[in-house]
Image (cartoon, rainbow, N blue to C red):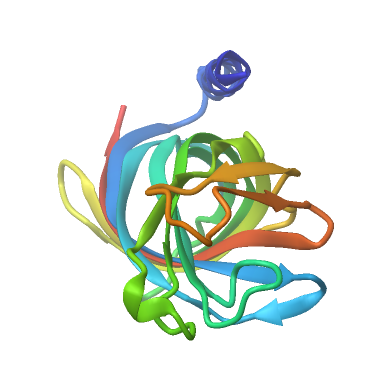
Length: 236
């Protein structure tokens, strides 16, 4: 499946560089993703605490017109969040989910001149899952003081592909050789990242089930995050 994402990236890059009359820009981008989750357990919305994670990647811009730019931005980005009351039929259980994705935002960006060099961008976001695990803390439950923090692999209950939308704004500082820019954007998953399956808790503790089942209809979540980013671009 990752080959499909690579093929998509290559196809978009070929499209970007197929118009020889356009101006092209390449660069790098990085910053912090305040990863969060819109989580539901058995139909009830659950509070999730954001987790700040570093992210970064490359960018390729093509000027579509005097006013619009198409941006392709393959990047590595961690996602997740800390869900309160995360296990079905259990109270006071926190699950800190940490996932890593290769993400491909395809943004349309405004390009009109203004005194502050402000611009806006929005577009679809495609993501492919690399790894996903969790730590489960039951210390707030009645017997929690005697329990360790459990760890588990979530790959069996997390979908490989995620699709969402991103929107944001930024400003750039042009120089003779390159442009420096800063951005703030919000991304929201439009699909349920959970899939039905079993997770295996480690370590094994007497009285605590080793296997916990998740149903994607009863236990679902969508990725979301606020990103603060900086980067540079060069004109080819």
